Image (cartoon, rainbow, N blue to C red; front, side):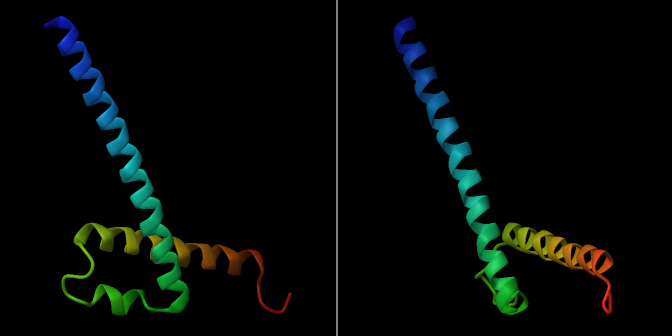
Length: 83
């Protein structure tokens, strides 16, 4: 019985690692998708479609959008026009 329990725990641990890996890959994929939508200026349109973007994805989009705004502000501060 102990051998079966150890095997089951090992399989459960491997499944948990797979789940974490998949969640990480999903987050990276969503971030890349959001970046493309931002580049195309379609983020607001996509987030306005009911049922297409889940609440969690909206948070990712908002965070990405805020990050891109902050990046542009930093870039503008580093490279003022006319310099």
